[in-house]
Image (cartoon, rainbow, N blue to C red; front, side):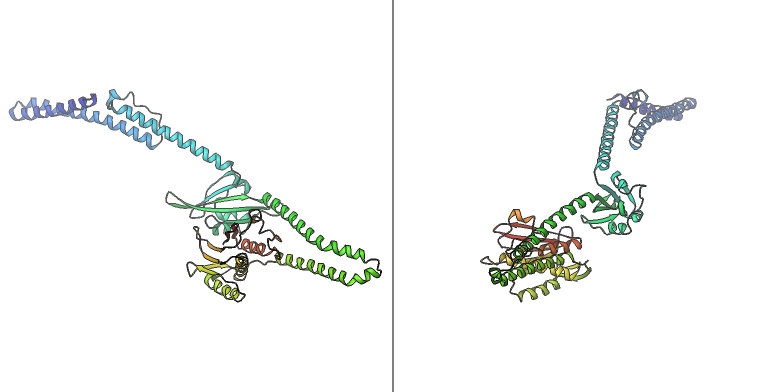
Amino acid sequence: MTKYSIKLFLRIATVVLFSVACGYFMLKQPYWVGGVCALAVAWAVRRLLVFQKRNTRDMKRLISAIQFLEFNISFENFAPRGLSPELIPDMGNAIAQFNNQLKKMEAEQNFYNTLLNRIDFGVMVLDGRENISWINKPALDLFDRPQPRKLEDLHKYSPEFPQILRDLRSKETKIVSVGKEKTARQLAATAIYLVSEGRQLKVISLKNIQSVLDETESEAWKKLIRVLTHEIMNSITPIISLAETFATPNEETQALLPQAMQTIHRRSKGLVDFVHRYQKLARIPNPTIAPFGAAELMSDITQLLQSDGLNFSYTVRPPDLTLNADRGQMEQVMINLIKNACEAAAHHAAPQVTVEMGYNEHHRPTIKVTDNGEGILPEALDKIFIPFFTTKPAGSGIGLSICRQIVNLHGGTIFAQSEVEKGSCFWVVL
């Protein structure tokens, strides 16, 4: 038996003994002895209650310490006042473990707060009422402070900014311009959803991509100038050479003049065709978004292309799949991709082109065009969407560029996967 148990047993035994004695003397007389025993019973009960109350008080101290996170108390000197000695080490260990766990949690919280405030993009958390429940320092720097409290507070940075973030779907990325003139910035906004403590939260990341866009734009201009220079020089050089040759007419040059004029006409026409192709690439209008059935779109495209001798199969799952897009532009994208796939598979003994339309794991409409053609070389795969780049002898190099521009205008992405001698697969995610 422990010391605590012995003390408890003696106090209970004292109450029982005095109670028995009190009863006995009350029945057998003298009554005054019974009265003394009754007082002794009261005294013994009081001692028992005080003894137990000390334990209760000490347990409450432990519970309060845990409840209010006060872990600097000790129970080592409480044993003489009633606390069970065998509980002291356990309670001390419990306090120490809670203290260590609290310090660990505080350290982790400080680490993540520091990390989220040191990353180079803004993060903010919206609750169900569109209140900004948390925002990191880079996000505040983007908005030049003071700290916005609600989503609608971002209206002053750009009128359409709140609505864009409100409509942002999970793992979707949109580009939004904030600020005016010299302070204008392009932000890439991405959202994810999570549930914390029963509340659905929307976590939005904001990345300032202005410098990246400037660099990309500069590279695009350099590439375009190289392409334009190459095409123009290829046409202008022979024209200049022929003009110099026939600048001083004689009998020999006079006989060759018709042939020279044909050459000049052919190169001039090639230059005009190139300019027309460039105009076509640069004049894609903004899409007119409206819902339409994917199955209906594929039925019309099938009827159109099969009349040209192009055969392919398609599946739409679910059958009532609806696309929110510009129907005419999406039809152009599909025709370009299917024609390319049919041309790539044309030399195969059993050409096969399939189109699959459905939803991906993020419930976004997805189009997959697959062929079993020759495939695309790895060194050419990352260039196929560049304007005027082509792997076909008679290709213009603008079909896939137009596809990418149209898909980008719809806020989607287009990419390709390919293996040489096994075929290619083009993905469009809206």
